[in-house]
Length: 265
Ligand SMILES: [Zn+2]
Image (cartoon, rainbow, N blue to C red; front, side, top):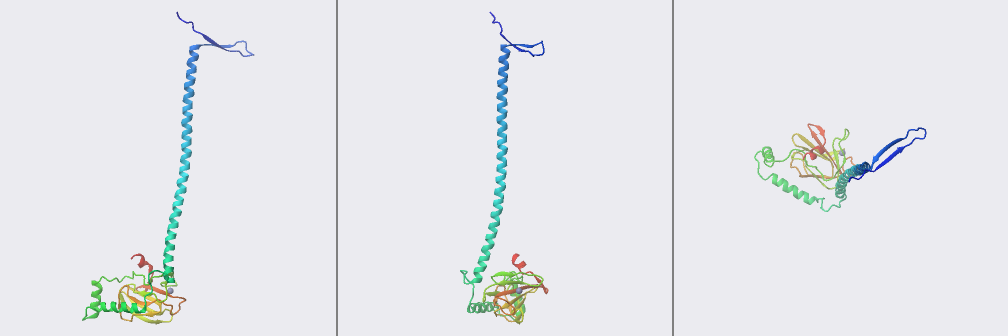
């Protein structure tokens, strides 16, 4: 026996119109519609959830991007501070040296220097030369001596750089600090100059170096010197306002920046 289908009537009756609109809906159709509605609602909910998750992720991405930029900025700042600290440490070392508080005894006594001078000269004269000039150049070749002024002649700090009006650099150091020959060469001048005080000029072949304002000179004109040999003591002779070495490098008579050679060494 078949159960009779039940219906529900939906009647829309407008006030001004005599004809009402009527729809007869079976219960089974209504159930289907309700099911469809539920499915649609679930789909909408899922979509909304997904969308809000995407929005949340986008917000997070922005925050992370901002944080990354902040970290990068901090890192740059850190790097800058690190460089600054390294520079300060260098300055500190130099100042310590100048003020005489470095741990190493930087100042050689005159006795030490003349002893090392004697040893250096003694070693240089060791092979008794028949022709002294020939022997010297041979010795320079054998020992691979450097004729490039790659050695900073005084352990100190540059208090004045090379400019149009200043043909070399000033290296501030303590009075009595050793002045070293920047390269192998021959002393072409060692004596008094009204401006540079006790002055030394050394010819290295292609280059000539000049050392001014020294307190004391240890070399004489015509003497052959080795790179690193003590040639004088830092002073403030001539026109100078304090202990420093005025140092020049000349290439065929024209001044070149001495620091160039230190950087390339
Ligand atoms: Zn100078």
